[in-house]
Image (cartoon, rainbow, N blue to C red; front, side, top):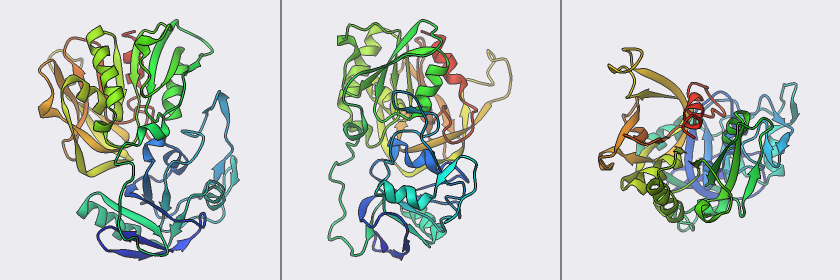
Length: 363
């Protein structure tokens, strides 16, 4: 089996996943661990994921443990969403008290093609040099590389109907949660804090429901934010109704577009568990400390908010320390804000989990 890239480069590897072929956007992600969370993250739908860490699968695959409906304690969803996997080496054996099967067995069961013996360092350098590249895992080079969904991936990963998630210890607050491909880690954070969740399809207008809610949440998800017109329009209505709004990842881009701002494709997307972010509100005369607050964050996105396009009532809140790209926006007077990274930290650091508390305090 081979990896064919849109720019003509071909890499030969050893198949260890499902005996199948796939096409998608080839991206790389950093991190010594977290392959279970990465591959079950709906944000990776439509992508072939290259893991930069040289050995993947050494702690095996755990048993799913759903504690409420299909919300799992470990996995980010009920299945693998990435189309393919690329590694330098996969661990044929595994060692972990919770391990139930090997990485290869999991991929085979989920019908996901994968290649090992790929020079992931060279591939990462190619992706860093050329930016986004379409690719194929298979035996023959395709005549044309194309994305049949044209970046509109959200309808493929969003739920089809409303679902109500009741916490064990309710604090009497409810949020309307527009699920554009949300990670279970976000649900776990809200439920742990006693918040009742109305889990809605991406195009379900919560203002047309009989259910009452105290705030609106915009989830992460895959694809081009410009294509999620239904969610953008719902968010635009929410801004006019003056209710608290919190967005994560794709939710940051949706909020910006609903406010009248623009988004753009990044040449180098951010995917990994070690992205440094600065809070621009910190270190000011009104803050408790004169030092800027830096967070180490988990990220997975290929689009960004164009901060220069934001309307006057919004301000840039967070920036990435590596490339100065936008990492969050907030309204100057209303309880409306969003971040480009993943504060639920699955997998990754927990520096930003306080943002859930900040949002809940506004409900």
